[in-house]
Length: 366
Ligand SMILES: *Cc1c(COP(=O)(O)O)cnc(C)c1O
Image (cartoon, rainbow, N blue to C red):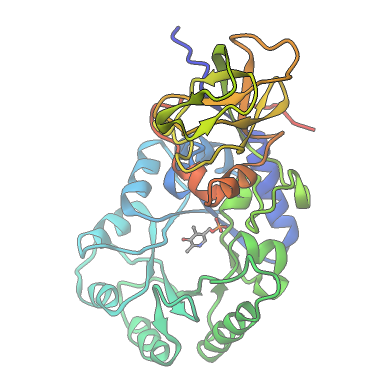
């Protein structure tokens, strides 16, 4: 079998444990487990199969993602977080048990006017401050009244909002958003869904009838903290590769495209079989940490499509074929992302199709 050393190992048992942690932190809430964007790179179908008995509902962004889950045999309801993109999505939703988040009037008009094979479950998104999607609080009562009398809607909608600043534990915006949606919900006597991962971990007042954890399911802290295992989270992915070449260069010689990095001393340079073609961030600068044989070394020079180089000078007994961790249980994806000027979410969601995902089942990490 063709086995490329560059691969992401995914520990489904850790995702299950992180999901239990989310439920434990918000004991009165039901979980809408967010597995959009290929489960943040972890493989949507596999993650759904491993969580299907543990969570009542899955959340994805798009109807297309929900269809893929049905094709993979997942029978849980699936919430489409961006709602229908066209009127035809409503029939697809009614036929397949997709829940629709409605965030603007056109989507509501479709619900009120389409002839459907059966009624829909809908959530209504309220714009409490993100100013991206959702109804203004002042328009909400009218929208609710319209939907109440529609035969296309099978039960009361859940009111949903998305927190804009919850990863900043000092920002007063979160409390303001929670206050606004609670106000709308009590006026209309509706259930709510507010908390994403940051809400679940840091804002108990955002815990409502439904929570929507994403990033934390994969063992990562939404504040961008480089600490591994904070709050009991278990990083579920290890991105690995290997050293494919080692060379010695003189002081003054450059490494990689544009010679952005120039050796200040005689140096031992290792080349690793991963690059931006795999989803390793091209903007990671020299100095970004990489683990070789479990030891921290620094990226040297630009990230290429298929390779990166690291400075192995002074490292003992390092050879071609030695294992490399780009991020995982010993190097936080948040730390690598932060070095590259981005967030761990982007690195996980940005893994490309050429990286094989290997699943470890029933393995419990410490
Ligand atoms: C992606 C998403 C989430 C999950 O957010 P995390 O920060 O990954 O927990 C929750 N709700 C909505 C509407 C989303 O789009």
